[in-house]
Image (tube, rainbow, N blue to C red; front, side):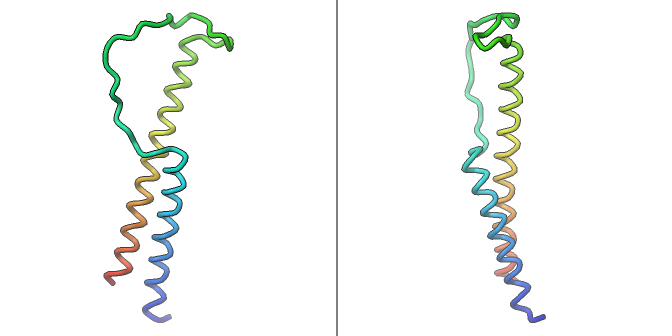
Length: 93
């Protein structure tokens, strides 16, 4: 196997990781800080919403969704950085 083909594999792997990261960023966005402050007035946790769920159940769903988006956006950013590292490694070797 010639030396150039190993470099091609690293570059191709880096590009694939970048593409996967960009696709995830498209759907989940980049990690964002929260800027929430102040006091919120709202309904008590036992209040039923129009869809039949309680406020507590709806809040739990929101927390799960927020955690999923944060995890996926961090994964996307990690894939983009890892793809860049593979491409840089292929260029320097």
